[in-house]
Amino acid sequence: MSVAKDFFIMLSQNRMLNGAAKRWGLKLGAQSVVAGTTIDEMVDSIRKLNANGISATIDNLGEFVFEKEEALQAKEQILAVVEAIHQHKLDAHISLKPTQLGLDVDVDFCRENLREIVAAAHEYGIFVNFDMEDYSHLQPSFDLLEELHGDYDNVGTVIQAYFFRAEEDIEKFKDYRLRIVKGAYKEPEHLAYQTKEAIDANYIKLIEYHLLNGPFTSIATHDHHVINHVKKFVSEHGIPNDKFEFQMLYGFRTDMQLELTKEGYNFCTYVPFGIDWYGYFMRRLAERPQNLNLIVKQTFNK
Ligand code: FAD
Image (cartoon, rainbow, N blue to C red; front, side, top):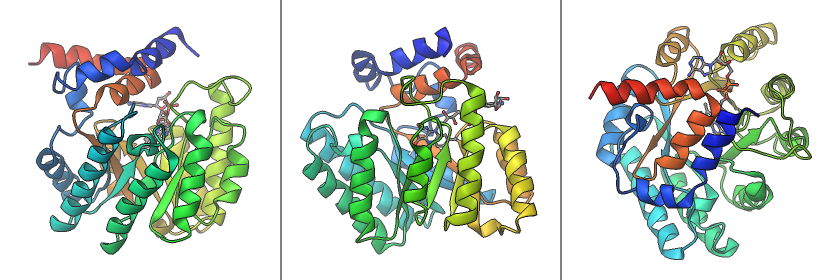
């Protein structure tokens, strides 16, 4: 783990800065990778993506929620996003974080918030993805997901390839629609692979497993090596395009997003929006300190 990565992860977890940034508006270059702070701005961004044949998964940004009041506000905002998808006929679904809906407050309370959102989305045929956070929230999130999956078929989650347990998890959730990622948080050596080589190798293994065994796989990466490998693998194994999609984050490798769409692959962009942008943005800098270029460009191109 590089010093820069550690540094940005530390900043992403700073609660004081997370709180303060909500009052700043989009700053530090975040406007390149966050699709506005309001539902209207987010809808405009998604219309543009949809016009190019790209679907979206919408993240109403929010983390570090330790009060019921805040979790209830987040629930109302996400319900408003569900309504906006339906009203504006967007080709989009929901991504949410269980902690935003009160996982750190009370599990039963969180379950009820999640249930309300999943039920509302189910009415309109909208899929809801549970994003995965750090290890301490992994099992509680999987438990909630399993409970809700018993009642609704429009839920799925994320498998993080850096975890040693990911292989077992993907087998357990093989009948679910899954997004597979490398993993964005700092996790200890006894739980997770630490080197790029080991993470990449496990990542490929998990993707191949779910492409062969699962109902639908979202391959969420900006790594062209992985994308090229997947293209070859699906072609060799006769896996049709409607069984998988590529996903990237809003504002990253935009040319490649369009190129993959033009090549006929399903493509879905992860679209974060809202005032709680700071932690998300710092994790992007941790993943790729070159993203600092974004800050420099934004600072000088005002
Ligand atoms: P990396 O390993 O970061 O990069 C590999 C190579 O790809 C680089 O060496 C470079 O050659 C190329 N590359 C990467 N980025 C760029 C770029 N911007 N421009 C040019 N070349 C580039 N993590 C979670 O823990 N939980 C989640 O729920 C979650 N959801 C996600 C959803 C989506 C849609 C995406 C895309 C990621 C998500 N992540 C999530 C983050 C993920 O775990 C990784 O931390 C993140 O995607 C960085 O890894 P990577 O696979 O993109 O490639």
